[in-house]
Length: 205
Image 1 (cartoon, rainbow, N blue to C red):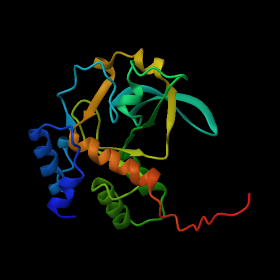
Image 2 (image 1 turned 120 degrees about the vertical axis):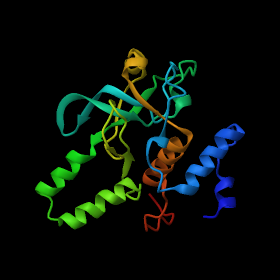
Image 3 (image 1 turned 180 degrees about the vertical axis):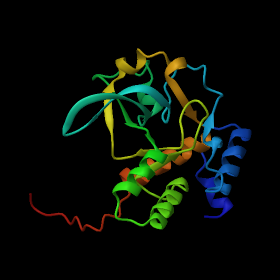
Image 4 (image 1 turned 90 degrees about the horizontal axis):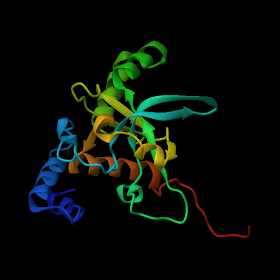
């Protein structure tokens, strides 16, 4: 995709400076997957944003029925979580746990049949956001180590539970325009790509 094509898909609500930064970030991808995925501009906000990292979210991994607390990233759209978005039904917040990348790598070394070279290539692909099922989060000092989200490890909880948390203490990070763009792009690829090689011709039910 060339520069002109990239500009066609930039969000239209950004300021000219934010648009420029996002454009430059996308042009440099994947060589710039670092702290530029995050922003500190919204750290005082009481709004929960799509892509926020939150501490101590309730996580379950069925069929195991035990519930644990874990650092997690929010999948739900920001507008859907807005307190003033009154619905006719209770709204749930969708999220997935955050996993330590080094621990994941070590588990592969210990349990996988892959060679160390193959595992290293896999980790490199993760860090370049080339694995459709995984979103990579670079390290934030005192917050998270290099981490990953498996996009198929989805959990949900009531909106009231998350809104009862102290966001200033419990929010680990908020994604920048660049980070949010990549995150939504990966979500779209994982959940919405059409090419499943299935001919769904109409017929009688």
